[in-house]
Image (tube, rainbow, N blue to C red; front, top):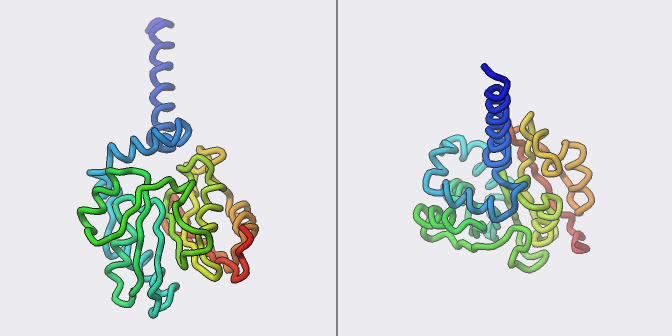
Length: 229
């Protein structure tokens, strides 16, 4: 193999790794919000197949714990930011004691179209998670799963979730963990960093619970006097 061929092969490998990092692992977040939305639009019709959601697992580890945390008499609104194809609304709908209403928000029109096909009665809003079109301190429960690290500014996105959350309300979100999290500088937090940020927002009763190989669930409640945001 000549030196030129070897260098060309090395360059091709490095380019492939760069593209994998930018487009697959980081899902385009370092290339701008428009690229992130474009990628989700592109995979929307096969997103559920790619993720391989299992209805039993979704209920056991997401729907039922959330329904229980809200209380079996809960009749308020759950605002699901980055709802995608309606993963969380679908599992909450199947909980026998859930009496509330879910509103889904996403920036990808095609992801929302898939959600609308499977959940035709679900209220859906196409909006930017960084600028939610909802009043401050208005929603008793806000959820945002597997999405913070793909926002232009994850910390500001987290503050926006808390802004619309009512005092005493429940926030359920996720923390990216594992070796992949270390390849997303500026987009992820250590557990200590995340807890410190949540305490400032102001949130309390903060719990980081193992969920998947690459995510922890993050549960927190907004302080009853937390209207200063």
